[in-house]
Length: 254
Image (cartoon, rainbow, N blue to C red; front, top):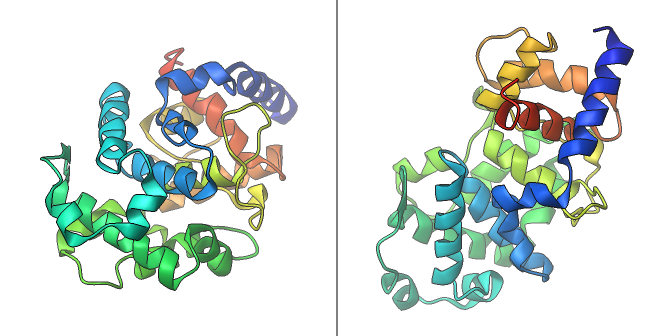
């Protein structure tokens, strides 16, 4: 396909998959449980953090996390005590365990009390062309309070070569406004033009088959290569093509 044919094909797939039906099988349904901005932010961040593996298990364990927080994520984060955390029952999602979960709650409180919240951190550290430097700075702030070294692996750093799939997906949810009920568009201080595609095995394989990605590894360099192409197709909303690439891979076996 030439560029115009490719754009026409992918635009059609975006329309096909960027719908409310997409929510039913996707962890984006977790922040959709809430209406308060901070509840949506925190629920989305926690769900995105464990978004690897089989999606039914991701969704099940995300609901379990919300139950631990009394289904009031922001209120729990801001008012919890050490005793509240000690009363948590056993929790594990793959390598994300109960101690990781407890730290995330503590660190989120620090982000909201000392750094004006999640949106403010990412908005402060964005560059003119990308949010990847902001992810790097966010990770430093997130782990500025005492923590176990093992927990740091649950927040990726794109400046150290990671594609940072989960946190880029989270940023898509918060920043992109699709007016279709999937992505929230909550963070008005950040332009959707700066978003990067959540690059995983599905979107990566489809992108290679479409010859818009050459690099074989799904790493930071591959993300930059893919972003460069997608921004040519739609400079204002490049990450919308995540729906096309993911949908083609997961639902169509492209």
